[in-house]
Image (cartoon, rainbow, N blue to C red; front, side):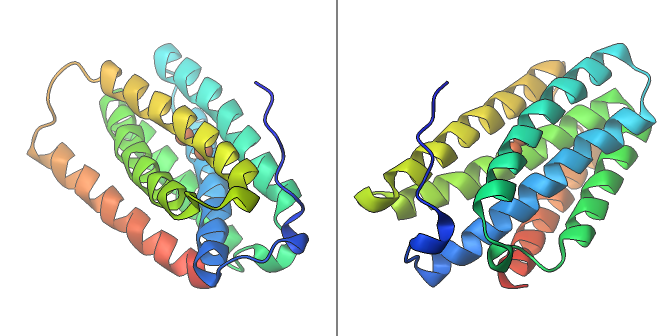
Length: 183
Ligand SMILES: [Fe+2]
Ligand SMILES: [Fe+2]
């Protein structure tokens, strides 16, 4: 799909809230790439490998946009930490079995959906940022597909340990985004 590229980051006058949000987007996409790399390093299950491999490629596209568009000043200083956290999350969840891996992706992508939806509401009515909004809307569609594909792979409702795990991921993601937005 052709997407209009936003004007260069340096040329835009961005609200400080949006600057922080974009920094967290970049950190989140860097972490997402590593989640799937961590999964691929720790599973031999063919279904999970196909799933992780396909999603990895999409996350690499999301990351490539932020890598090439955000100036270094717009990036988190803690990127190695977000990458490590993502890899460990993917690896641990894959070691826990395919169900845990799919539950992890469902929880992460549910959080990312909310995160991008909040930004899109912020960008509404800002025609000068329409191309950026279009890009984020496209990424959000991809994340929704990831969430729904993971949910479809879960053949029964989550039990209480899985619900706890999802809650931990949701909280961890919120904390991670709050930190990445600032440093
Ligand atoms: Fe993504
Ligand atoms: Fe995703």
